[in-house]
Image 1 (cartoon, rainbow, N blue to C red):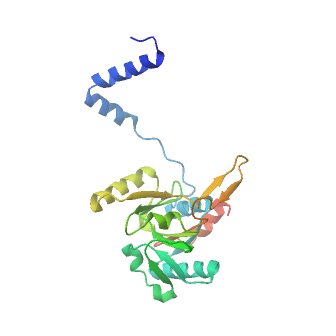
Image 2 (image 1 turned 180 degrees about the horizontal axis):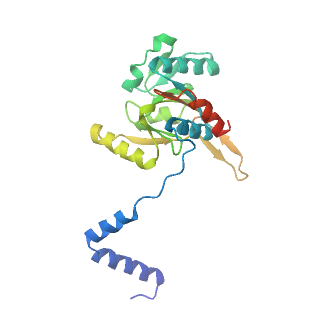
Amino acid sequence: MSDNPRARIFARVEQASGTADTDVIARELAALGTAPGADLPAQDLATAFLANVLKNFGSADCVANRSGVVKAVAEYLYLHFRSHRLVAGNDPHLAAMPWREAGVLPRFGTVEPGEPVTLSYALLGVAEIGATVTLTGKANPAANNLLSEHHIVVVDSARLVSDMEHAWEAINQEMTRTGRPRGINFIAGPSSTADIEGKLVYGAHGPRNWHVILMGDVPASALEEAHALAGR
């Protein structure tokens, strides 16, 4: 055997992997189990998710239904742009929203230069990291997640999961049902970067603002408690 320590280590690894029984490997992997997830900031899943969204320097709204979504979108657009225009993906969940109720005028497609606001529909919300998960493709263009100045994401409260392990289980189930997407985006806050002195800058290579609208059965106090937990 070579006197080179690196060569000796790789030789031993190769020998072990070549002679190990597959049943033994499977049992040893199962015995490892999974690492415990991070503690959630609240027992209620919606509150924990919203708190981590806010800790990630996003903003959030809670609404009961699709009418609430379009009203929240309209208020956000008017607050920031005095406008009711935005770009939305061709996701059927977004197409079915009652946009006329709030006078919102979405253009369905992919964001183009000069269009500052995009809207996406998330497959999941992950409470552990305060992230939204989108499966990208024709219905949810990746560009809409990454290129606008303001990115609004709608998440159904019934699609919240506690941690990354449950998120990947749900993603795999969705892919079994609909096929593989073009991409999978975990988005946990607006785009940011820091220089060598640690000065954080937002919007350096993506959206400067990230706004999450949580739709569905959410405790009335969830958003208020989330703000208190996040200190924002």
